Length: 413
Ligand code: SF4
Ligand code: SF4
Image (cartoon, rainbow, N blue to C red; front, side, top):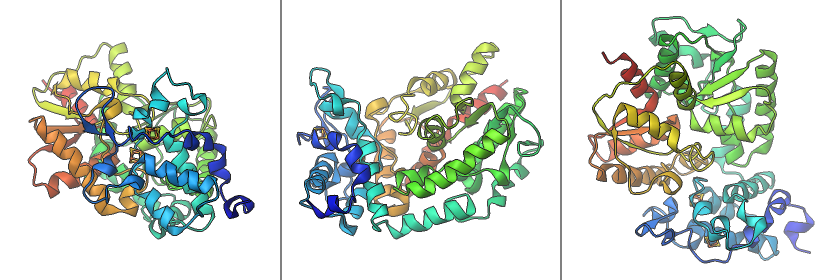
């Protein structure tokens, strides 16, 4: 019996091993030649000049390593952690894998199994075996101790409210049905607090009764789950579930793609009874029901799909429908299921900042090819990485979150 197996070091990977074992090493997850829509890269890490651009830097090579581990030819190690942490968990590989997409291939164990889920399982085994990246360990320690991954005093989470001229209800003190769950990045990052400010201004303008948790808001735990620290995720998610249920929250909206995916999908029914929406999704329905039309701002835009609401949750058209009412949007070459990742997620920015920024630069270059002036997204994480890339490239293109455009549109005379 292999050393990995005898110590049961692969207990998470073993649960999803069929997905890794069914890889036939075709390389479709590296560059797309199917569906036929020009040649383009699938894996953003493989495309980056910062990566060595060989097999372990896209899913095929990673699956070969997984087989080596499962068959006992390889052992868990720091080197394997480093290889698997050079991946943003964007999920593009699973969209383009013929096992996952082509209904004529009958590999039922794999067809609906997520590559992201497999990579996360290995990361969990690596963390449990003591091979976590130091940068990820310190982030997850802060997460459980300070309730945010930025190692900041959680009291700072309500500071952005100083910049608005109305009082937002404190959902920890007053009974409230609708909670605006701000998320750590929008609450604590100065130039991204605009997302929280515009979200609350829209709700206030529309007369929607809502509250926030401010210093009592607990991180959703997404970063812990993505980087393999399942203990930290369990700790934080249990605290969140207890708080949200105790407060009697009925609906949660969030302007963060990562929080949205985590609360709605990864909490796995623990928040049953509470409806969860991305802000844009919530507003689209609300505006339609109230027959409030959005005015066109007469600007040109292109939309970047955040992986966490796009590929991970299948929400592609709602933001596009809203954006089309407000502006004149033009698609980038890769979009929807095939959209290139901004490089911020999956612990990549924290674990490998240079590679993460290079991914963002590639995405920005693609946006610049459209010739429009505004790059729009629906996630504070994407906002931050793409803004950094725009600055690095000295681009005049402007990064805007869709909530800001909705606010501007509602205020357009
Ligand atoms: S999840 Fe994204 S970054 Fe990771 S291997 Fe797949 S395509 Fe590449
Ligand atoms: S496309 Fe699927 S089967 Fe082909 S190498 Fe990638 S993961 Fe393996």
